[in-house]
Amino acid sequence: MGNLRGWSARWVLPAICLGVAATAHAACNGPQTLVAAMTAHPTTGNAIQLGSWYASRKQFECAVETFHTALKADPQSAQLNYLESLAMVGAGQFSAATPPLLESIRLDSTVLKPHLLLAELYEKSGKISEADEQWRQALAIDPHSDVALDSFSASLLARKDYAGVIGVLQHAPRTETLAIRLAQALDALNYLDGASDVLLEATKLSPDSLALAKAESVVLIRKRAYLEATKLWKYTVEHHPGNREAELNYLRILVMTQHYTLARPLGIKLLAATPHDPEVLYLNGVEDHEVGDYPAAKAHLEDAVAQVPDFYYSRFYLGVALVALHEWKEGKENLEKAIALGYTDSKAHYELALALHGLGENDQAAREIQQFQDMKKAEEDTLEASSNAAQGDEDLTAGKIQEAIAHYRSACASEPGNGGYKYKLSIALHKAGDAEGERAQLEEAVKLDPKLAGAQKQLGYLLARSGDAAASIEHLQMAVQDAPAWVDAWINLSGELAEAGQFAEARNAVQMALRLDPSNALARKLSDQLARDPSAQQANP
Image (cartoon, rainbow, N blue to C red):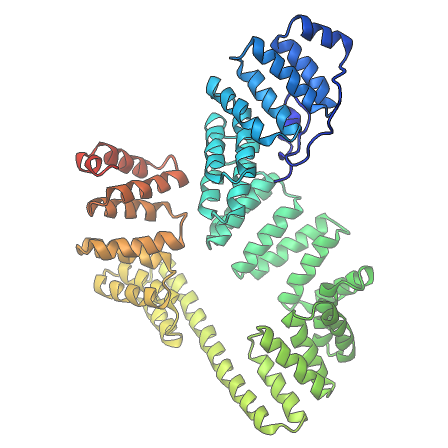
């Protein structure tokens, strides 16, 4: 577990660390005046003063004894039970700390701090569901508690419960830490636009945050918004002059976007400052290759590969440089290694063919050329399909439905195995009123890519309208499985389950929707209906 994330320092006792017990003390020798006052009058106030003195000197066992003595006089004190538990944590008595903490909460469940401490203790002992419940209770007391939001979301993210993170943080303040965590969860579920929006909101509040810039750059690159990512790092470098992390990120995006004229001086500067950094060596090697300085590329990339031998980009560019220098054998070895490590660009097979030809292995070179041509054709088809789909998106936005349908059909023809394009076509057909065509495209889309949550949800809706409840539920379940933060999909699933008489499952589904969006009016209405409906109650376990 580690630290109690800093919050105990703001309470009565000083910072306590789970897992680090205080040094045992043979005798409790506090200030004479405080000891005398506590001996004569073991009140809560006197116990707090003396116990805090002991705790500030890490004499936690003495603090425990002090609070325990006061509890004999006032066993119904929620505050003293809590303080005794907190001191026990400081003393490393984690198991013993739980009962007084539970008693404190029983006596007064409206105080935030005991819930936070109990959640940490439960998490440390592996009682995850109990910890979650305490964090939820803490947030019910104070929905803006930094500690509860931070601790609960961190735990959920560590467990890859991305929907849970979204549910906890979607209405939270856009602090740097919480915004990045929410964006990570949205990104993990492929809600890239949502992640961008969250980070943009946070950046407006913290415009000079390097951490936010880095997180936003990751999302922009995932969205293939390379121009925006380049502008972002240019701005960041200008506002953080001399910051190596910012400069390295800027260099990465410049090389990725092939802005070698801008990248060259920055690469040289970083190489001078960190001559043995494998990434800086790699990036400079790429720049050397692009300007035709193959000896320099070879030197830099060999150093990079020596440090990180399994980075296939370094292997590929080193192989290309060696082929350019007619070092056929070494070029072949590095190119084959790049392909084996997962480098998928057709260029690797072309360069490998050159190396093989240089070695006189002409038959194998011919096979590599054929593979290069096949892959190149596939890449060109993919590019053409992408272009048609992008034009279809523009047409659809402009209300040009028939033009959009034509472009989406072209995209599907160029890349028939792409379920996403068939899903786009289904949307256009829906707008055109072609329900039969829409359903046909949706069925093909989910066969090609079962993880297309949007297609699964819409197909589930169409099947429900046609009276096929079982198939509808199956597709809606697939939708929420692959988009677990999609509130509307959970609501639709709950409704279909209820129609099918599967009331327990319907309640679970609508509760998931409410967990994600507690204020959702439709989910609340459905939940109330399930609570009141006599049929649903009869099926209530």
